[in-house]
Length: 265
Image (tube, rainbow, N blue to C red; front, side, top):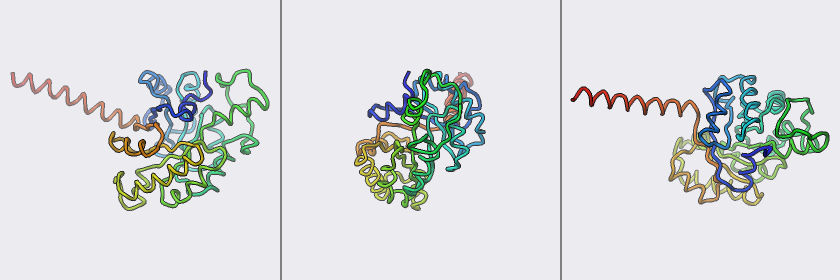
């Protein structure tokens, strides 16, 4: 079993499909992810009331699947990040990174020496690393820990080259909703200024040999625009709460249609 299947696909340029968890509170979400065919999901602690303990149980369960579970944290708080990783999270999605200094703080917090200074705790039994000890285990943990720096402001765009060059940062994701909002053009994902920002970050990532991930964009034509520009074929398709809402609306409409047909007969 791969230590981090999603990270392997991302590094090799294979298509990846990811969603976010904001509503689910049980480990059953892992089975749903696998049944649909998702390669990964992240538990969103920034935009939900999910507790670190709930996130930990979900991430631990995912270690026994072919799916990668990671966590979007609300800040770079070292205690929270290290506890989540010790509990089974296979990566951290860090919001609003604006400088190389912040990227280095993320790496120092999340990685074990020599890359970082995260404490080497006992953690939980990880079935993907059974039999590894000492330096081999530390190296495997660092190699499989996926750190994604989110850029959500023009300040972050300007610092993209320095951010992505930080050793230990696996990828950058542009948070398109927050970026366009901070630019004063919320939701205008194909605006000339937004396209220029994507080009800047894509060029920086390409020079570093690391991927740029699109965030917050769902429309096919908009995704195609940025993937053809050079973004990774890694698609963050939405949140479980949105899936529930859209599914409920669809089947409600189906039932309404059936009832209307019966009434008209």
